[in-house]
Length: 74
Image (cartoon, rainbow, N blue to C red; front, side, top):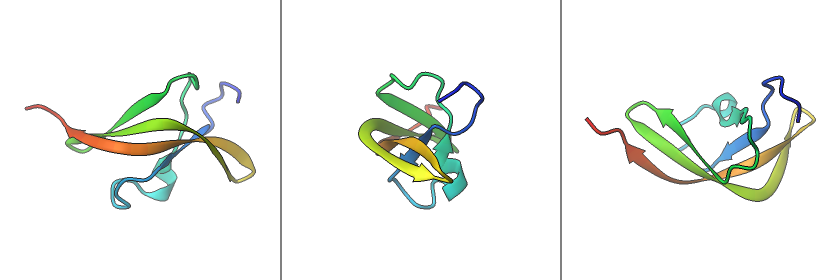
């Protein structure tokens, strides 16, 4: 994908209440990463890259699968 900030990954899994569907579409500048974490309120949602892809609005997106959450230290 080009570097224009258009979504290139889909975050799959985790709590349905954690992210609205449109928040699951993300842009990651370096698609060679194997893990990402996303701040969500008082916790981080962790995702790992999978070999799967999905199509959203005619765009092929790499799928990252939820693995765990960790809480922000006080």
